[in-house]
Amino acid sequence: MFFYPALRSLLFYFDAEVAHRITINFLKTYQIKNNISHPSLSCNIFGLNFANPVGLAAGFDKNSEVPNNIINLGFGFSEVGTVTPLPQSGNSKPRVFRLKNENAIINRLGFNNEGFEVVKERLCKRENNIIGINIGANKNSKDFINDYIKGIKFFSSTASYLTINISSPNTPGLRDLQSIDSFGSLLDKIDQLKKNSPEISLPILIKISPDINHNDLESLCEKVLSSSIDGLIISNTTISRHSVSSGEKGGLSGEPLFDISTRKLNKVYRYTEGKIPLIGVGGVDSAEKAYKKIKNGASLIQLYTGLVYKGPKLINEINKGLIEFIKKDGFKNISEAVGAEVN
Image 1 (tube, rainbow, N blue to C red):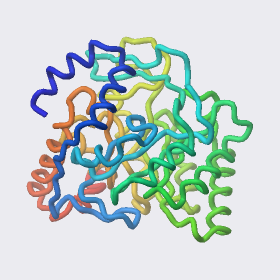
Image 2 (image 1 turned 135 degrees about the vertical axis):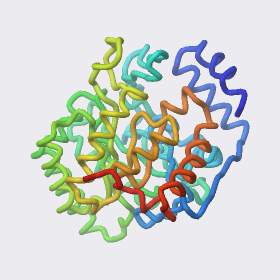
Image 3 (image 1 turned 135 degrees about the horizontal axis):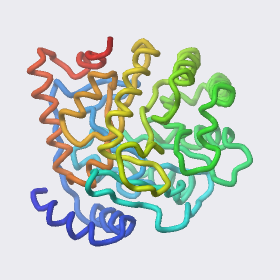
């Protein structure tokens, strides 16, 4: 995709959401195959065999329109969503803002999506790729936890894994589920569901906020370790504005999120003692940063905003770079590097 810089200039001429729709339609029309496989990159996480550890984060293919074409770009896996039980239009526009000088994006989309039914119908046609589903709660729901339980039941036979998104800053009250009492109630409901429904055997992950304080984070990790949750994703977007000039409300992603999310990743790896797999997200736009995530505890990594600024070539650049880093450090496989920088 050597032509991406020119294409990006064209896409950036449009509103961010219009540019996103153009990109989705392009992927529907043209298939690009850049798959990279190498023994040092393959890994088995959550009982799933990943060709490489680089995944596309939730938010791009919200409605599962192009899951197979995304994998063909070179990703080892992709995450659809965020999806809510009922369709919803999200927050009012404009709601996505590019911060070009900071290689960042602020969004306050508000879980705009077509709902469980539409997404499941599309996913039933997917090829044999690792596709996760990111589940959210409807903005006007009277019971957020029940929305997540509905999602687990609804997609249990469709997804490769499920992500419980309780960390978006764009649905009022959603992040309250990270408070210890509410979080405990959520885990109890999930544990009870899995106990009473042995057919629900797919991995269930929880995506957390980079803004959670250290004490709550440690308590959260303790509860996860005593539950049936299979992994954590660190992290969602941040409401912090310490390193950017924009005052727009919403979640900040991209380069300014890297240090914040990586420090949280390191802490979660220590708090969980490396006992459960972690997915590192936030500001990954190079092989160096991807490897930094892995050495700070991530078994897998995800990106999105970096793709917006650097294009599809970034995927193979990261995978090829990881192969070189692994070799340089004397590892035979990427799994040996996980947590290498965590004390």
